[in-house]
Length: 204
Image (cartoon, rainbow, N blue to C red):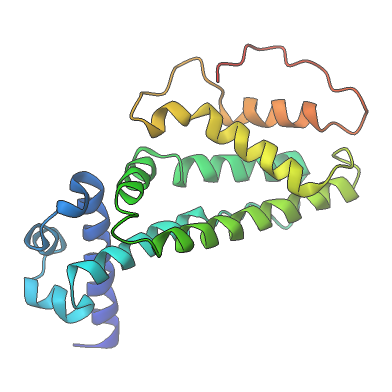
């Protein structure tokens, strides 16, 4: 087996594990994961050793989705924030992402060290957002405020819009789109002292 083949097999097992754990939680069987990956159980154990190791690896792979980098080579801070919001929603707040988040929260007592993994990935993403916003403030596109505070506001707005989905509720059709979320944020942190009131209703 070549190195490329081993890498491909490992990636298929990880993806199968992520999908299966997301659907069935930690109760998912190794046989189900191996079947989904198109490998025999012995191959799965050769790559990961145990179900516990496989869950940790799948979890770590999921956490890498939290590391959203929206900064581009050019563009306004509004455009960069929109890219961040769209990436955050498509990765972290997707149906798959939220389902895996619920599984992980349920298993933190069994795997307490995974809370640190999740926090580290989240912190990397938030630090990148802070740098993006600070750059916008330095260019005069956003009002001068602590960039860490502005990042917390944006993330709170994002997660607040979707907090019902964390509990399995469907997304309400009247909830804000990425462009509307950015509009609310930009008005709140407009360079002039008084931000205008958004002209559309907000359903949080």
